[in-house]
Image (cartoon, rainbow, N blue to C red; front, side):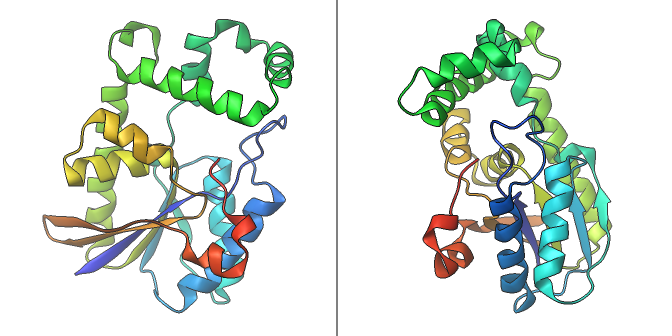
Length: 229
């Protein structure tokens, strides 16, 4: 059976003007993952969404890998959901980023305060009770990701592949393969580490989740490199 290495992107730049770019730590996470993958896989293809953090994660992996890798094929179906829209539907006032920054700064742990608000916002989106407020519903997102997975498996044609994507798509894919509830999918999404690797084995129509959220490559290098946003 062939293997799909599902990689969550490296740490993005939370709190910066351009969240989508990797932080310095995110680049280091990607390079470490590249070194780890070099001993385990010679990918026949690499796929990723069209977000900057997806592309830069592949660039960092390539640097660490130490040998040429296939160019990343862009599949927009692998993109993360619009977290900005999801949060702003719960907290419309946070469309003003300066106001959001001031609100969060009033908490002892601003990052944790944002995470709590984010989890509430995602739960609201997933409930299906407010679908008319979102450009993409939760069900629409799930279908998009699953269609992208079907497409990349067809294009991979039995080869091992690396996929650079985000926590949401990884959680949706795991949910589908394990037949989990939406609630369990959200719980999984909350614990997916940056540059963690989830492995899917596939052969024809057969697909199974063999490994979920492995970040041992980071722990072996420096546990402080383990991040979740």
